Length: 193
Picture 1: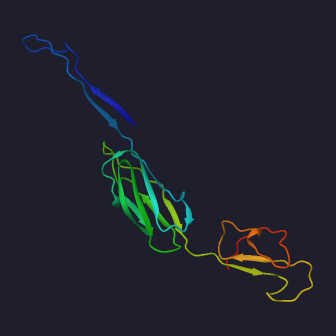
Picture 2 (picture 1 turned 180 degrees about the vertical axis):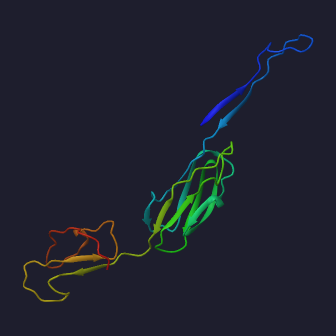
Picture 3 (picture 1 turned 180 degrees about the horizontal axis):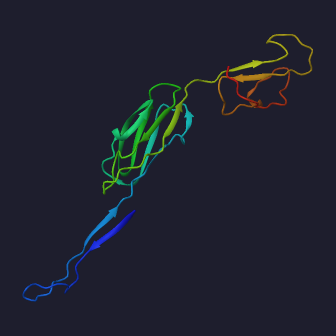
């Protein structure tokens, strides 16, 4: 909490030995501040946690109070490095580059890494999670009625499209068919190839 404290002495509150009363004194003011600053981490590319194929994340550190001692070394990283760190007061920016493909990375600021004007250390930030993914998905087409190239007199053929990872979008419109049509297409579950 923050409380304004003001100390003053009014006119004619005391006298010297000769009987002269005191003059008014300018007040002595201060802000009693016990509020710890908070900080949140966001990225232009997406909200934590997320997966993407970006090479770099553009990070923003938003602080609830002005600070002058927040620096790059205050940021705890797992799976990457920070660069282009800059900012002042309540807003700081940086770029995060992952060390390797496909590994979940984390970015956080732990307790009391920087301070406000009153010397209160910060609370822990959110843990920002990002998984870089640069591998293209693969797909296999299977049928319980036979393997590719078999001969059949069935009116319909059941097909399964098995992907190497969860897909953001895949539908009947993505399948090219010669000599027939796709009907009753539905996504059922993920099975890794």
